[in-house]
Length: 250
Image (cartoon, rainbow, N blue to C red; front, side):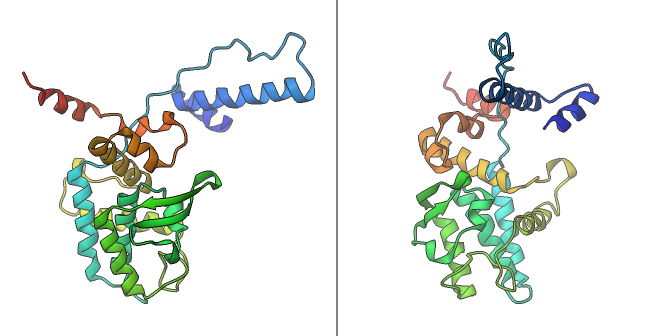
């Protein structure tokens, strides 16, 4: 963290988020020294120091048009089954699940076939080691998942597998997304091409859920215990705010 801060400092423009993280680390370490090792003569030096303001959260999702473009690209690539597994269908299922559940990529890749209930997944291991009793999955995503389950023939073990039957890794999931995004971008000008990552798909799902059903639904689907994190997913962009104002009745 300190190395990253120094790198930003050499550029003459330390990132605000890096400053916030560095301050938190220094404060935590200073308080630990003061309480556990040896008290500072004049008290903990971080007491009374006002923390820097946290940066405004950015939304990093896809528009509805781009979401459909990505799913259509995944559908198109299903004509290429691949060796040893129906790669195109598997990739489509992985992307549909990320867009239809709001799960993190690590959570999706840790899923096993026997966790699927027909409406979603039970006993899902989430970030921080917490278990969520049930994570629902959107209906259209379930259709693709069930196609993949029928094609793979697997009833137990990893849900998303390589051609050798091993669980897909994060790096492999990243390559899958890039392959599908390349198909989606094939005929688009440079300025309109999709930039996709698993977290972008999570943001997309949570924003859509918040807009259509409310922030509380998005908070529950996000798996966050605190309200503070959900706002990064539901904060409107400048474009969507301008469009909403234009639609107001005169």
